[in-house]
Image (cartoon, rainbow, N blue to C red; front, top):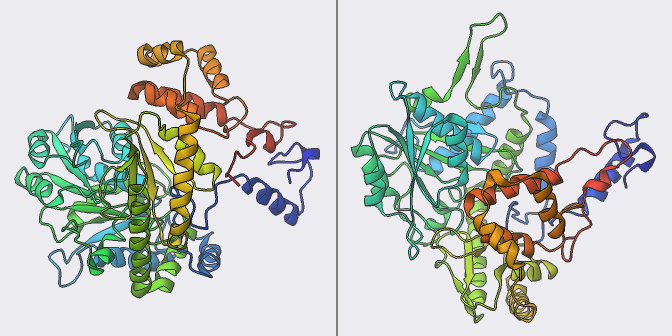
Length: 508
């Protein structure tokens, strides 16, 4: 565990033996959610393939110190990046013999960076537009809002239907104006796992002479395989005229370790403004396709090794397992009174909500965690109710039979506990408080009342209930303040352990 004699410091007075350091890390990891075993429905992607972790770790180590800053210095990394881009391009309707034979791309650190770069490329392609704008469905990933914020691009949000969970193509088309540089859609949307009408949206963008980006970070690697298995997947990739760029994360359903996404463009001219180049200083001329300059080759080598090892047949098998797991989990939800699916599953997501006022979804999430199932609560938004999101991977398949009984038991326990009851004055405060009215004392009082004073609380229902009662702008500020309380340095003498909460029920 932590070396208390040195205060748990990352920089102790005397160096610590290697095995002791590893023991400390293993001790800290004991408090994390389980990354393997098919019981975590968010954040990580586990194919349950024996030996794959070891292969990826070895490949990562072999290239960890390779620097992607200069591809001419490390041709091994350039070769692996080009191979990953080609694989993603072929899978998503590009390459020789397709309607998009000149697809090019870049490997990024993740979906957020891919989306930021797609927005940058669109913005920089039109220097004549002083106040560029992008059109995004309200179900579009929050990374589009992050890109707009970072790049000073205005965000035009089109609402999605409460019934279909998709944007109306006519409303998307109407939102396009003379300052629009990019129109975005999802395949599928993260929150609910439904595919936007890509064909119609891309056609509207093309008619207006505007780029169209398909965010397939979440589903781009599985949808082609699900289609081959007989799932009716509509066209969403470069086979659709008007689609100019696509992002797909390899650290999701390509099952590579974290830190690898691919951003594809239909042709080199569309990618050109993605680059940043600078020569007006006395050092080396900087040219970067990504946000980062120095990039470790480790994640790229690990992704290359993963794709090579699993192969096309392996991904088809994993997609089949995932499809069957989705069907089993959806059936388990349908069997419980008081729950309903937000949408019939179209990809690898099961998302459900409560139809019973006495069944608090946030309490249910805690009850499921106590039984070893770690799900992702989603707050209400506009006319969409709060929901529970399950990202389903191949590792879930052997666990499906266990989920139904545990879900029913968790629902019964949540009903017995009743909904979270926040004090009336706190609810009134959440409804009327403005973000700029939050003071340090008020934040500290709220945090203490919610159990956030000493690390992550074991039960999150009260926190989620408060956030759900607040409008989005206040939610954002509250979360910034709450996370800021958690992310504090472990000063000498306080120890690393003091910054890590004791795991709650089901968190080990």
